[in-house]
Length: 335
Image (cartoon, rainbow, N blue to C red; front, top):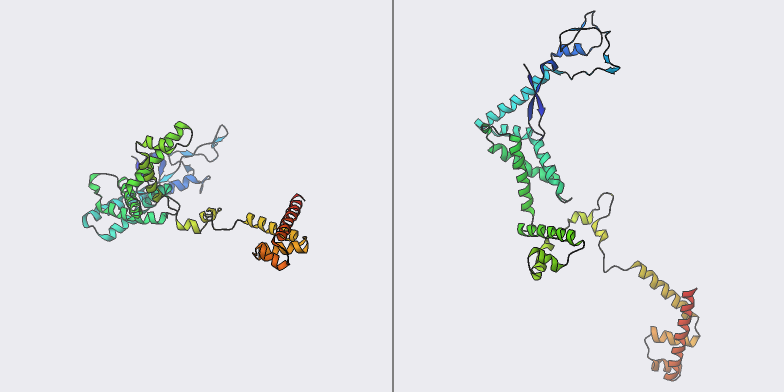
């Protein structure tokens, strides 16, 4: 006769029973005696599986290879697993009769690993800002609802039923937090699939007209759809402020049009320095003409009154000063 041994279920909750051959089940005392490699008080060691006397001096190797020893499962371990399984069955039966909240809470604690398992599976394809702890919290409500509505007398497995309810509760909570209509999400997926098909077919990025023809809509309707899809491209504020591990935040990669270009600033400072050096090497009258015309914003006639010369003479002085400055700046740039 075989003894059932509880085996953890693959879904993470409950247990199932597996049949263990009778020759692998021995009493605890016999298992302890079988593990000893010497005689105790001169008594021969008893093989638990066959009941024969084993010689301690006998060779335990076969062709130089240690003989395989089957795992020992004691009746105490098998019965403890049976007690757990029987306890869950009794708890389900008691809860079905009384619907007591304390018994429901005990069932929730027992099947809680199912929630963590399902939340991890659902959270795999979600953005990084979605916290798995929030998914687990939503899944707990689904587990409670599954326990309250489950009917054990139908003979169905609770784990399979509960996983569907937990996943549904998590998805319902995610949809309730989404401000984008489901129709827009659906159309966004259609556009993505169409882009993939055309990209594989044309081996290039398709144009708007080609994409509209693939979606069987007009070009104006496609552009209107682009405007709706902009609502789906939202970045979490946490990702803008706090950088990810080992990388930079998105805010650091966005261009600032109002920021000053450091390269242009250095070039401008160097150009100003060269121009100042070139002006300092001019003759005094040429330097006065350049200063009054470009820095004081005086006209040629007003500069002529200051210098006591005609306007045409000031124009000649200005032209000569500009040519000398240009020559000096070219010499500095070539040096």
